[in-house]
Image (cartoon, rainbow, N blue to C red; front, side, top):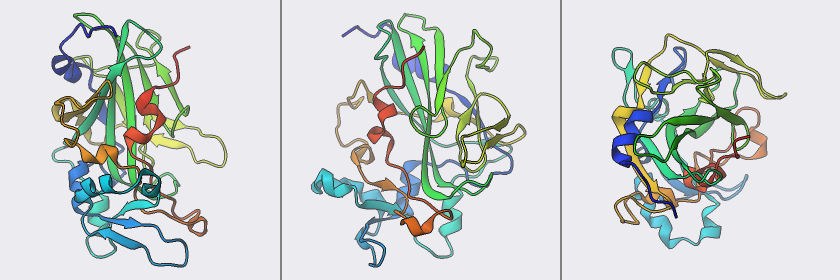
Length: 287
């Protein structure tokens, strides 16, 4: 394995993205811990049976270590119905046009470029809203990957901007003008209303039918993720050597309620967590 030639703690903030949130979207990012405090962990029992509550606070995700992996597929985190449900879905609210929320980082050597290193910046939203005609679901994990040279002074090579799952996104580079950066070198990313998909420009971004297009805009709150980075994994290992430092990484259930087919098109099942997604291991190769 090639040695890392730079100080990761020093470099992570240098390439952290600036997220420009849509001004009309009420659903903002939050910390994982804040979300877990407001959820219950349930086991899906099917369409005609009441879900079984595993624990009344999702923050006790360490309990899932005692549950067999194959059984975790039926687990889901849900925000209980009631007067606080909508507030919990809205996440952290901006102050004076700025937003602050943790940005979770997975760092690893690039699998297809031996002299490059990948910095994955993951964003968590408690709710995927209906704005832009999207189907709603609880829990929403989004990310971009910034690829840099493995050198004492790394240079930004390209960024993988993820939209809707694996292979629905693409690599963009600063050299071809597709990737814009701030005066201090941070990639500029626009978060679409409702879906929170990531894009490098403001405007309408078409999707294959029947999916609605994504809409991004200027004028909304700005999230400087460099101020709120949480490094959770380096080359598949905990950065501090503690396996349980972030127990939610090992959770294999759903972030958000599991919905039956009868719920479509009003709602759909929440996503699996970041470390369970193929993107966590490797993005599609650059062409």
